[in-house]
Amino acid sequence: MVHVPWGDLRGAPLSASPHVRSGTYGCLECTANGERVMKIDFDGIQAFVAVAELGAFHKAADQLHLTQTALTRRIQKLEALLGARLIERTTRQMTLTALGREFLPAAQALVQETTRAVRQLKERTRRSGSHFTLACVPTMATQMLPTLMREYAQRHADYRIRLIDASGYEIREVLLNQQAEMGISIQGPKHPDLVETALFDDPLMFFCRDNHPLRRQKSVRWSEMNRDDLIVVSNFTATRIVTDYQLARRGIRLEGRFEVQHHATALNLVAAGVGCAILPASTCGAGDRPGVVRIPLGAPVVKRKIVLLERRGHTLSPAATAFRSLLLRKSQ
Image (cartoon, rainbow, N blue to C red; front, side, top):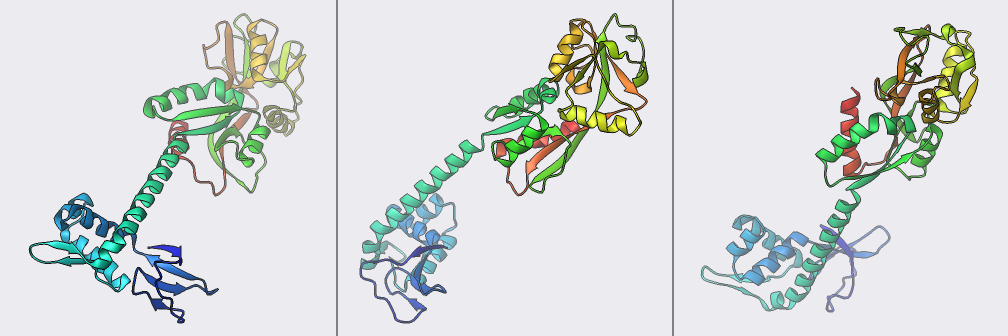
């Protein structure tokens, strides 16, 4: 039932009573502040217009995908609401009453405008739901995400993704500023407006050239690394903060000869033979970079947790919902 402000309906009389039925087009009600509103039975008006335009109840019922009994009940409910008969029906014919003929143009306009408005709204919803923005830390964007996006594109050809690659801190800001619907990031400080879902652990590994003295070892201890050729990421990055915290608990201090801002830069330097590096496993898969070997680190094993971040209370678009489902399924 739709409520609209009461206006001038062809001179329909108003009653002094706060609850009064109109004898013309509807019934009046009073809200708490005394404003009069009219209840409009859209289903009944739509049924009335269909019968009037098609000239037969069975044709109107077919058009609206109703039984004739259901259609008749809608008409009867509308007439009861109006307090007047709109259609005269006999066993042989159907005709509009004088009031029905007078009401028909306004009823047709109401149905047409409402149908058009609903169609436009559905189209806007479809368009806005066909794409979404994802924020992601660069290591995920270079290793895990491409595989995921290829499968997503195959499953949902009409959906599009806008990708923002950013640091863990920047991802939280992007989400809070409503610039992205979801973020794939490193676990960090909790925020009351963000919901965090664990995806997987991303262990740190030792990356070196295939001619490095440690290249054949199945695992490398932190104490075995030579600081003179070690490449480390900046202590302002989330990965470095997690690493330093976990190592400090065991009395280990990470130092290197070279310091860079990005994991990709460290990996490029390793490939060029500048040195070796400690990087998340997700930076580069085994065998993905010719001449580069990655070896598990132990004593201790240090991991960073990769999480999915979303705004609390936010309803995801259809495109984002589909991606979230795929991401969670692949992360199990």
